[in-house]
Image (cartoon, rainbow, N blue to C red; front, side, top):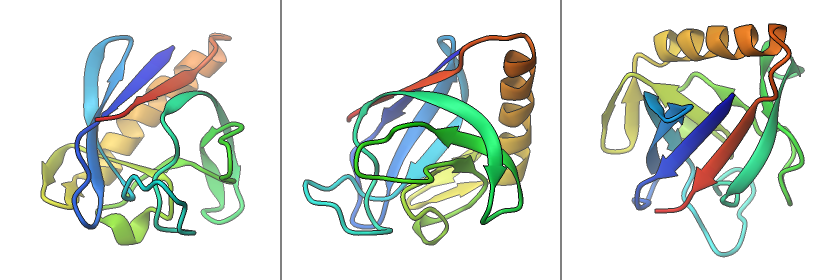
Length: 133
């Protein structure tokens, strides 16, 4: 399974985007601001392609998608949330969007997570490609 996150231009607070699975629109995304220099907990990860693993999150106490081997970042996950205050470098997903906000995040996350879990159970490799604006 290949996910593709296409970023829009960052605002002063966040970076909106869209997530597709195998070329089909899945949901909207929200990340921290894309910056030339990393500010801990306030910077989006570098564009690129990453392996995705479903692992236990010590912070959230549940299995969540983890982006593996992100240069200069640890513990980057895909999870529910609505604003830049919820992300700390992670990727938030939602069904609706407005400036610096995504809505129906838990619904979008569960739909996405179920697809990822099915792919993992089928033995598929899961990746995400993040494209800059």
